[in-house]
Length: 299
Ligand SMILES: Cc1cc2nc3c(=O)[nH]c(=O)nc-3n(C[C@H](O)[C@H](O)[C@H](O)COP(=O)(O)OP(=O)(O)OC[C@H]3O[C@@H](n4cnc5c(N)ncnc54)[C@H](O)[C@@H]3O)c2cc1C
Image (cartoon, helix red, strand yellow):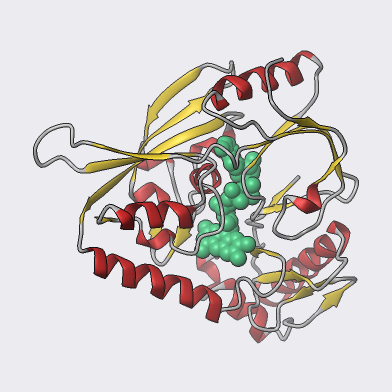
């Protein structure tokens, strides 16, 4: 196997925004230009040993098990470059190609630096581009699929492929990759020439908004549940109206400032978070008749 880092017993709490999770049997953080080759080699190594694998971006949407993970975690965060492609023909949109390990916030900065508009909604977004495509992340009324042109993957047979984005295959916080076992290597986004100052102000506005809403006050994984139209309002508001904010189990607490955030107040275990999730689901089902669907991924 060709890789430059393979750790054993690495704690997932060090790699997830919840700061929760036990040891992974194997943890790889490939670095360098040959990331795709290293990733293919690692994934086939795991397959030959019948080890499960999990692709990890920034771990900002993951609840990792207290017992850890009995297989290989492939961390993409060092695969973080971006380039601008010239327009294919006069008048065609410009394209930014971003590797999966870059954060949304870094990509917003990259676009701003080149006076390219269209990715401002990603300012302050803490997850990776791979994670954002996988989750079809949505912020400030825009979804990744709105600007996605194509996705480069390592498919189920570890073959490198580029697939055009088919908007009909994406939905609210849903992408076709959630039904597949592929590694997203990079994504190409449509952008347009813009006024750098205006773009800059938008980025500042979004970042300030996230700070005001308390996104980064405590370890958390953003919204726990997907919004549900049947509720007629955001899940966070429903949780607030049901007076569940501030409910605590072990070290996990429903944030006092955001009904759809569970925070780690210190020493929370995955079991505490799960118990809170179940309590929120049970209460909303009893009082509103709606089954809340978790947005966070259980590892
Ligand atoms: C403070 C805070 C604010 C947030 N705000 C928002 C928001 O505004 N909008 C929103 O949509 N989400 C938000 N989130 C949630 C989270 O950032 C997104 O879901 C993000 O897309 C997850 O990216 P990640 O790199 O952290 O993925 P991870 O959490 O590491 O992984 C999530 C899933 O994506 C898969 N995955 C990750 N990378 C790849 C890849 N390269 N190839 C294949 N699969 C991959 C993983 O296997 C996993 O199933 C927020 C989270 C936090 C902590």
